[in-house]
Length: 113
Image (cartoon, rainbow, N blue to C red; front, top):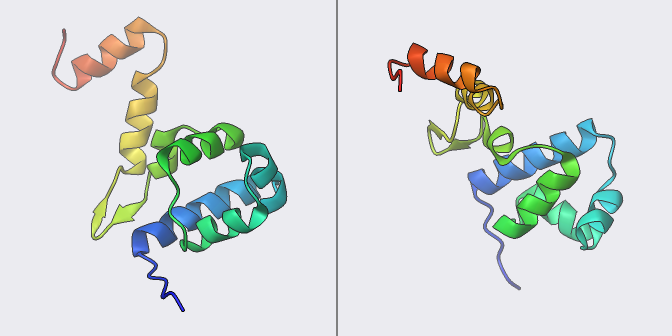
């Protein structure tokens, strides 16, 4: 019998996926249909048993209507955050289409170019 080793990172990603799916009122079955897999695959992702490929993660995030930056906000790898909530807010503010907002952010950060 094959032994499954579940990493803390995979568990964290799965937990975040479950939280987002439930927040949006989607069942595992509905999300699975939307991305073209069986619901058992979603169960495995959420348990951290199977790793999510980059292309599959992008499909999932599209269905959940969340950016990849927001998805990884607050996720830890070892003792380090991938990106903090504050960094995520700053990044999202910078991505606004208003060029004046972007310039103001750069000025605040000490780079007026």
